[in-house]
Image 1: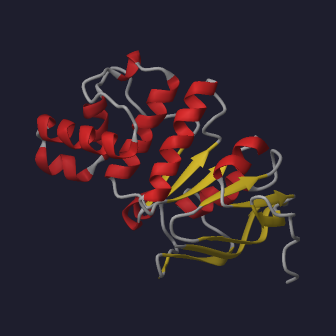
Image 2 (image 1 turned 180 degrees about the vertical axis):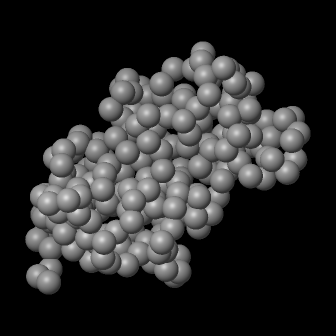
Image 3 (image 1 turned 120 degrees about the vertical axis):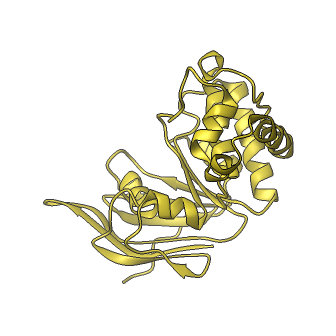
Length: 230
């Protein structure tokens, strides 16, 4: 589904990404690990079009992604769930989805959109009430609304940036189940985390970054192997 090859990104004298390769096949969950400053966020910003790479190539679903911004990334089938949500607290779940979904702009029929939310929520085990006001939702439910927005926008690859950092243990367990259902339906996920136990539980492969480069990668349950020499 996704291939990132030779990604380079500098910020002045700081080389944030150094020749990074990242491959995410269809229907897989890849864990992206590394200390703060290892290059994880820079790499995902390049993928989602928030910043442009200085060198390298991105191919998504067989098509080159280049000189793209977030709008083009979303249209291609990428979704990114940030640590800081982009929801409007005073609005309902349905109204927030309408703001983010182009198709809803064509309809402007809240009842139809609410029905679509209920159907999608049931399919992925999200447990979302389309009539709920966002301000009344706990953190875990708000996160699920963001995931819902990405799914309805057509995301086939989801980037989850430290998604469990503010969740209670029951909320973490619920998110893991949602991720499994996404994977079962053919979606792929890049799971960014500092929590090794969660990564080993849910991911098919782990990629470790250090000082802006790939320090190692391995399938879960296997000893890590160093990156191939370039």
